[in-house]
Image: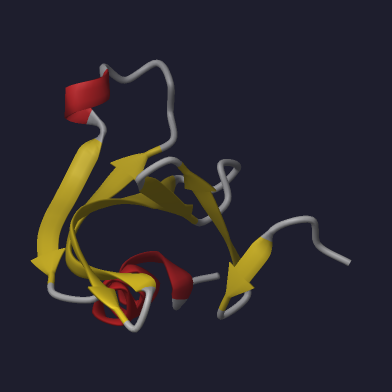
Length: 90
């Protein structure tokens, strides 16, 4: 049993307002920042998510690790794009 929540077979880990999708042993992961949210029936729901596809190679300077960016209007849209970026090859 995995100790992380998974989305389509890859780990999804939350750290504050950020989500990391993928495995750090792979060449790239996707970092998602929740930059907009609203209350829907007492539940905080993401309304704007910034995505960064990033290299996991720590020898590369942080700002040079970003290989692609995007903004989506929901967490579902963000996860779907993140899977397109890195999940289909897993």
